[in-house]
Amino acid sequence: MSDMAFFDLAARQASWLAARQSVIAGNVANAHTPGFKAKDLKSFEDALARTQLTLAATSPAHLGAQDAASRIGDAREIVGWETHYSGNSVSLEQQMSLAGDTSRRHALNLGLSKAFHRMYLAGVKG
Image (cartoon, rainbow, N blue to C red):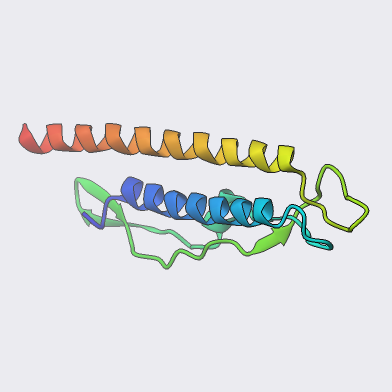
């Protein structure tokens, strides 16, 4: 089952989404900390581009992905919508928007994974 590239990709995105949600939660927790700069992760596409996924034929009829270590992108400072007089750049509205986007991406990831799992089981059961 480790040769199934879609499930590997979905797991990597789920890990990235969890890390992003953690960064967003940290931003919200420090919304009133003087001098705190809001952070976000590099995009999933950038993190995925660094993993060097290569396809390998496991049999004449199937393709799979070799195991590659997934490195989640480093946190980077984001340009906030506003900077307060204390030097804090966290905008709660922006963070809630990012949290909503992360939640929607996670729901899409989960929905696609469930659909692929059902198709896989249907193929195995015959």
